[in-house]
View 1 (cartoon, one colour):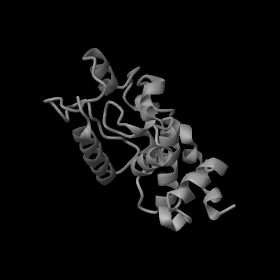
View 2 (view 1 turned 30 degrees about the vertical axis):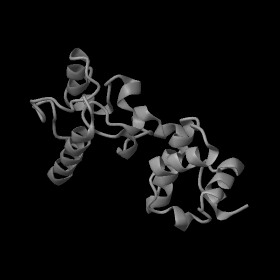
View 3 (view 1 turned 180 degrees about the vertical axis):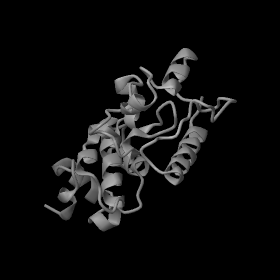
View 4 (view 1 turned 30 degrees about the horizontal axis):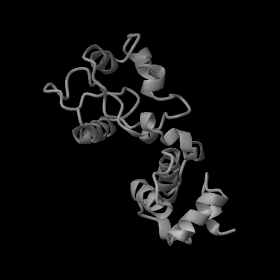
Length: 176
């Protein structure tokens, strides 16, 4: 058994596959993307591998490339597309400090986010807008960012600005 087994979700089969692909240590995986690892394993096996392996590799990428990874976020199922791809506002659930303890992800909770208590609404206005327009995200919206993007009263203006910038970057990567 190698040190690769110290990585959450890496069992015997994944360990053998990683070694066969040339990754023999945690250090050798640093900087590798989950997409690249998944493609390498598909080539190694000569067929498309179950998509759950991609989710495992996303969790692995987070674990090996994060200084102090949140062990709760290392569960492979938190790296499924619903949590990995941007929510309607552009936030990636897996990057949010409230996920998964305080919030289970916008798609799962259908826009009923924890911070509604601060605005007196029953559902996130961004979620409501996207649902009404049958859009998965605000990506490509000509009004972006609009007044529905509010400041989080629990964090500083600098943190709000950084969050909005990251959300816009995520939304600009999304296909409509």
